[in-house]
Image 1: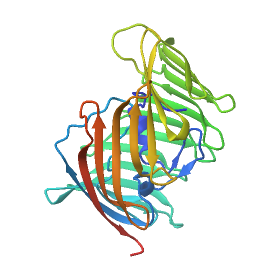
Image 2: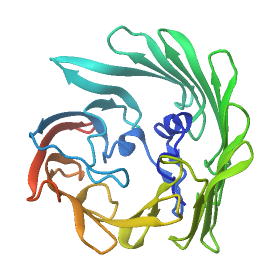
Image 3: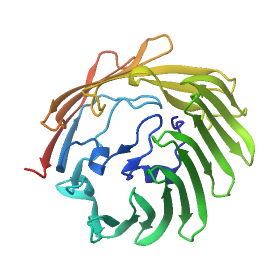
Image 4: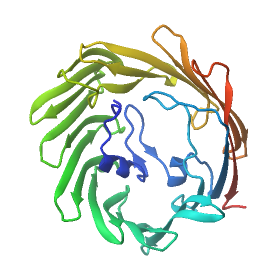
Length: 342
């Protein structure tokens, strides 16, 4: 099961950013620290990145990402991998956020306060549980602006998310159920009006996946995928793109199939093939996007310098597309990493 493109609600995306136990479809649950979520390995204490970008104008269509961005330009972490600083250096000064962690007598983080580095103003407060935030309040100009609560099953898979505005009015909710190995079986999302917005289900035994969007109880769009292959698609006729008519499915060898579907029921299918430096798939060596006939449309190639913890300290990125023609240097990244054991 995978998210359809354009289908991640803002409140759900915000939650995914900071969970340490991430529900992953068709895979074992991943227990990752914030440093690991930023693509780093080992006891990282800080990372500082510089980016030199060329004049090449690189664009790709919506779909699987080919160019992996620097997830955190200038960041610091505590010995357990919690992020304590996040942002970047601008004109010689740090611009970003500082995180203050509060621990109980056993050393467990129970509260997390995120503040603007420039003025110390509170931007987010998380009440932490065993598997991640259970209660989150975001702030605008020092005042509460958004509130969310999260529930988990005994294995750490999220089961419910509720969102509220500053007045306490519901802005939507999500309910999920998962297999013990974290395979996501069902996700249902309701909007602020209490109406079911969309539902996605996956049967781990038959590998049948259904996705449906609704408008006040009426089906707007629906598709079915069996064993990673689209077998049916329908959407209510109308102008422009619709939520859920573009989606990505995993294919063999870590490839991704990209679907672009239309009101006539036909879908354009393309595939992205990835090569990685290691089995953990943290650092891609290349990503090539080909159309249904196998013709190369877009590509990104990487060259790294790697340290003893398998973190890259320098990388060069080349891009290719039919528009660009020859492979061209897009950017050169360099970063300095310090470790807690140093």
